[in-house]
Every structure is written in C-alpha cells, then in structure tokens.
Length: 169
Length: 268
Image 1 (cartoon, rainbow over the protein chains, first blue to last red):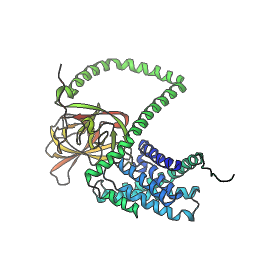
Image 2 (cartoon, each protein chain N blue to C red):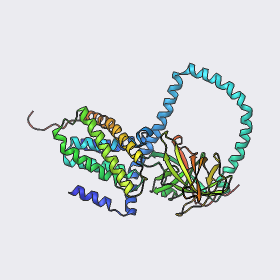
Image 3 (cartoon, one colour):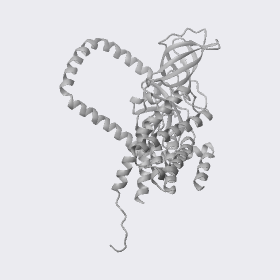
Image 4 (cartoon, rainbow over the protein chains, first blue to last red):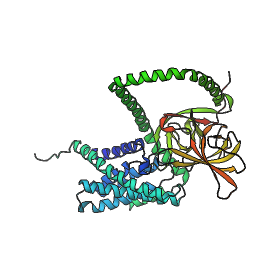
C-alpha cells in the first residue's frame, strides 16, 4: 500500500518537477522526460498491474497538464512501458548502461510519437531539422533522467517500512 | 485488455469532456503547482541573498562603479521619468477602455516543451474566458485558451498556434501576427503576415494590437507587441511580411493580467 502511494505521489511530484524545469534550445526546447522515466522505472520494476497504473497515471498527468488533446503520452507511455516490461527479466534493470539505454530509447520513442500525433492533427508545424534536434535532445535528456529517477525511487522504496509477517519468529 | 479499453475510452472522448477531464487533472495538481511556484520564488530569493553575502567585497566595488555611472545618467533619467509618467497615463487601460484586468499568478510552465504556454491560477470561476488577451507591463503576452474552473492556459504570442490581429503603429498598416516559436538562442520570435506591399515598413517600427478579434475574444487596441526586425516580400508578391521580436518576456514574470469584459470601474 505504501509503495503504491509512493508511486502515485512520486509520479505527481515528477510532473511538478518536469513543469518546473527549464528548456534548453540546444536540446530542441523540450523538457527532461521525467514522467516518461517514471513510467519506464515502474515498467522495469513492477508487476503488469503496477506497471499499468504507473503508466496510465503518468500519461494522464502528462497529457492533462499539457495543451492540446489527450493523446501523445497516452499512446507513447503504454508502448514504451509494455516493451520495457517484456524485456525486464532478460537484462539487469538497475545497471547504469541499461538505465541509460532505456531512458534514451523511451524518450526518443515518446518524442517520435508526439511528433507524429501533433503533425497528423495539425497542432504543430513539422520541421525536419528541428524534429531531428528534438529526437537527439530527447535521447540525451532521457539518458540522464532515467538513472536519476531510478536512483531516487530505489532509495525512497528502500526507506519505506517493511511489512513483517505474523508467523513464528 | 481492460487497460487498452480504458485508453480507447480516453481517446474517443468528445472535446468538451476531454476539456473537463483536463480541468479535473489540473484542479488536482493546481494547489501543488501553486506551492511549487511559491517555493521556487522563495528559493530564488534565498539564492540571491546568499550570493550577496558571499560576494560582499566584490559587490561593494561594483556598487562604487555603479554609483558614478548612475550620477552621470541621472539627468537623462529625469527626462525619461517625465516621459514614463506620460506613457503610464496612456497605458491605463481600465480608465481609458471599457475593459478591466484580472491579475493572475503564473503557477506553472508548459510541461512538455512542445507548446509555448504558461498556466495561470485563475479560471472560469474568476471570469476568465477563452481568447482573452493576456498582458504584462512589457506588452502583449498571449491569449487564454483551455480555461478550466480554477486555472487557464495562456498561449504565448510566440507560439505558432497563437494568431493576433496587429497593426504597425507608425505606418498604420494592419496584418496578422503569428508566433514563430523560439529560435536556437532561446529568443521568442513572431511573424506579421499580410502587410500591404505598398506600405513603407521599416525595421524598428512598433507593432501593437489592432483591437480586432475573432472567436468571441477580447483584445484591447494599442497594446505593445514588439518591434519589427526584418521586412521581406511575400512569395506571391502581393504582401510583405515582417519578423517581430515580441517584447513581453514572461520567463521573468510571476504575474500577468487577463483583459476581461467586466463592467468598467467607476472613474473618480
């Protein structure tokens, strides 16, 4: 129960942090993908049910707090979450290289899907060079964000009070 | 399967329900956003204070130089002050136009970086409606969009989706201003289209709002938008277009004013 509250609270806090963080033109003006990193973290560490709750909550916050219709995150997060969840047992999910690779790939897929959705619906103008810059920027930012989110959440989850059994001691 | 079903339900929501859903999400997050925004301001102030203590000697030296410079500028500033007072009188919209302004705190920036927008802590419950002009002492900031009960999104004038009817003050030429996004140096840009090709337009000309507004919005006349940087001929040869540097920089502001359609205040 405490872990689930931490998950929901952590994702909400992640949304605040993502909104509060600045943008850098060198990364294409996008924010560090904190919510995508949370979705990935729980996809790599939780059961399918936990993964879906985290993915849905993160996507709802991402699209709900952004302009435009619901869509980009609600498509992207389940895709990256499901893919990460499938391969989580075949890799060392807490390894730095795995974290960086997942962070970069997840952020790039989310960026690509957002670009397709916004371009197809005419909400944002398409520019090839800018899209390329954003993709690279998303990859680099995702590479840095997921390890930080994982580290913070691992520490917080370790600090949670452990449930003790009531059988014979 | 249940999860995918839930996602599909969210996708096919009609626009009004989608806005209500967003309003609910924003309503849940608004108190936390206000708290974070306040905390951010205090943190920034504390950081400034700490920087001041650490560099006291250096600051003293800087201040001594600054005082000399200020004394030489004092006479010039007196003239500027007189001009400033005159401009301030001219700028008081609520005394000169049938509009009143609603002061609002900026509670959050855009979460994804895809849009050039900010969220303000007032919504339909405070009399804010969509497509109302949002201004700051520096000029036009943008317009309201996606208004929920307790918060509203402000689409900044530099966003490509923001379109405002504008006028070149000196030449009296009208045109349509639309955002050009943020350039690689991080500066907001805008472009004014459909300027009459026979009108003489120069770099440095001031661009203001024309007061014309579609979509049931409220846009006062004569609000400063920015200055023309470059003028180009349209590809069709029928019009000119100009690159504009929007004047209002919201990144430095914590509060904005939404122009409302409320009954004007009694003049003294």
